[in-house]
Image (cartoon, rainbow, N blue to C red; front, side, top):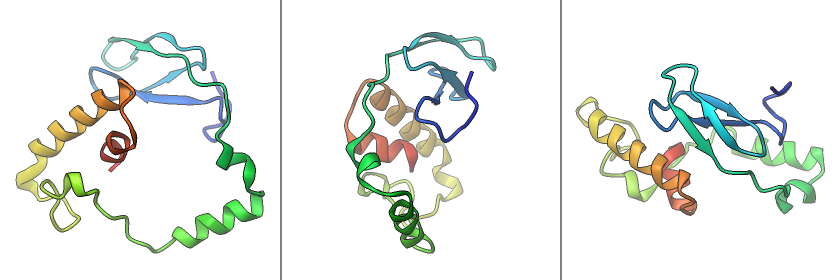
Length: 121
């Protein structure tokens, strides 16, 4: 489908049933998961490039990325009950899976930044 994972046209999403990666087009539509066979209904992707992506030169973008090196990623406040010290305790694995599934459903439904932050954390 695509030639580069870094292209704006590339859409790699999670299967709604098993969470495996599925590749979709910008137009959306129905995509069958190659792992579990589930049918995934994908919404059309917004056709605009985020303003932040066009405001920086390539050198400025690299400089911003370098600023992030060696900085620990903070656990979102909504997940501190799952990973209180920033790491997942083995006793919380099932709770983490439940939180991930919940965040994935919310994110797919168009929830805001908080759901996206929980999903990717």
